[in-house]
Image 1 (cartoon, one colour):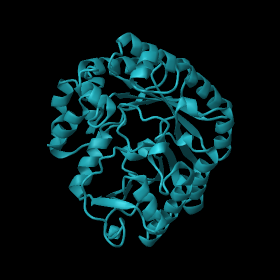
Image 2 (cartoon, one colour):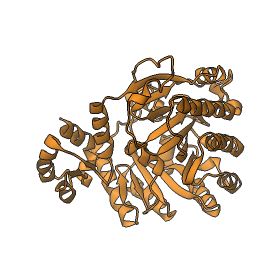
Image 3 (cartoon, helix red, strand yellow):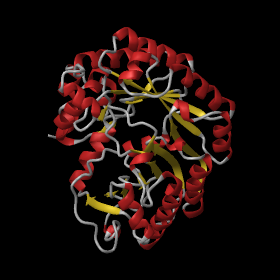
Length: 405
């Protein structure tokens, strides 16, 4: 959800799905829905997502009216899929992300989910996730969400160390995380914890403390991401002025290896480079992205993918809301992938998964060398399947480009 939208072709007059019938196969992949909520109480200094504090917006794009805009966009999207003559598919997964979705009242989030249910339907056993900051939920709000169909809570823990949280501009305390997890468990929700490693000033001992604190809460799923310092963010400016040190790739690699060992030992093996889960608790929504499924993104700046066509919405909430009010899909641009581009994307995403990805031809001939260098597991490679070693995961982009020539 970076604010920098990709370059692409202009959306045709017929909408982002115009001409889609010529592409794709006969068997349709699973379908997911992403609901973007672009509001935050405070913008964290490291964040470059398309988010806004309440005071930045207005003109029909404020928090109070956001759910109605999202519901209207969902209806427009469902009509567009019908017009494209694609068979109706219930949503196998729904992911409410942001921003901080739980800054909206539970009734608003459930209204958005209700529109998905009304327009597309939810598949039996659908996975429905909402992100949250630990200080924006309690048992009462989570009970309401669970009763309305939310099945999974993804909490932005980031760290258990106060000085690291302060550097990241996080508003919660470590104790908030434990309370939020207990509340989620009390109402029957699966729990995922998001962590960040490599923050300036974070020691290896700090990182171990955060991992231990996370595992003490017995989560079903953990995501751990290396901090990236992006241009245009407050933290980027602090690093540029010398107020904070830049991130250290060697430090981040060491912390990744520490996390992988600790999480695997606790019964959460890796299933994607930055994600670990107890068996049966992988994020099905995110697996859809990595496996090339279809999804529709709702909200300002949201991205979608349907049968090899990618498209994305206008970035600013006011422009987004104005287009939806005018009865138009708010798509800003699109990209129709050719077979070669789809093959590269399948390799790039599939190589990130513990299940690996099959390769053929010249790429398969490269596997012995990658095994010798400790980047690829030997046993799957014998069958033409690339599964990265731990060392290979740290160099996944380089492996991908080598295989793709």
